[in-house]
Image (cartoon, rainbow, N blue to C red):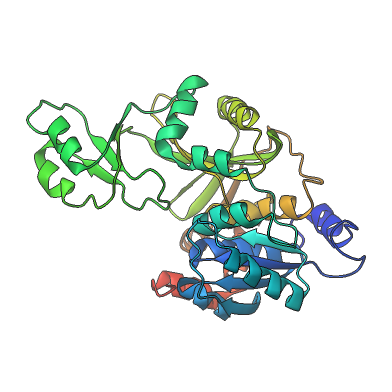
Amino acid sequence: MKQLLPELLESTRHNPDTHTRGEVLRVLIISTRFKLPYRVMRCAQATGAKVFVLGRQNSRKLKYSKFCAEFITTDREIDGRMDLDLAHEINFHCARLNIDLVLAGDAPSTRSLIQLRSAVNTPCFPMPTLSVFDELNDKWRFGLLCKDLDIDYPKSQLFANVGELRQELSGREVNTSWMAKPLSMDGGMGCIKLTPEEFEAQFAQITYEPILLQEFVEGEDIGASVFCKEGEILAFIAHKFEHDTYFTFYDHDIYRSLAALMTRTKANGVFNFDMRRTSKGRVVFLECNPRFYFKMAMSMVVGVNFVAFGLTDGQNARLSPGWGAKIARFPKAFLLQAASFRKMERESWNALKFVLADPIPYALELLKLQE
């Protein structure tokens, strides 16, 4: 995996602003969960860095990865709020382990680290300001921003609670499906497709408030990711994942929309956007994740390591917006391709090597035992 980005790896190892020539970069990941921080760890390690993790109980099985130099359990709440005691704990371990850079491994730890970075003595991975993070992480506010920039976003309404939602939908003729969503949960948590025939049963599943009611858009799930510095896009990739296969592609309209969003917010760091593409080619933005994202390791195996860009402060991160299409088949798709005796892409071999290099975490996820 270290051969994927040789120029980036070289600049990471010899960046005089972060560590002495010849030394290995030492990073500390703050985590509350397993799946996303694991991918952050793998992307950081692929640059040659030595990775340590400070995490909550839910992420403790990261210690079973061969790429985790040390897992440290913290009892501090990492929930996006200001906690100076957490900053003191981070500083203690950074001094003890001679850490060069601190990274947030998931959404709660990202918001926490944004608030604490002035109290953390070690440099942090590039992140947006708190106001930008909160605007982009909130689906309602993100939708308003899209509307202001003339970016396609589903028809949406905001309700304070289930009672208001029931009053709006019950007893009226509805000819389309809707999605009920929380404003800032990630990983699809809390998203419920509402249909008129099953409203009451579906209302009972909504355990959060306020509630975003969003018109359901038929189409395929796609996404796009960027690394930005002061609102300038330094790296871009559009992607989709289906049938255990990761595809990248280029779409000028998506790139133009992302450039408008990033320029408006003057954002720093990594951002991922979820979208739907209809059968007629219409691309509808659904949400923004102003942090690392689940498919990030897939992006790495095709040659775009977003963690590496931040470790080098954006050096060598300028990718052509028209960066070509790639395909990476993960184990199930790899086996199907191999069974048909078809030629295998280099990126698919990279994907297989990625899994086989660290099989225990892959098995934990496969058996849903990671948390």
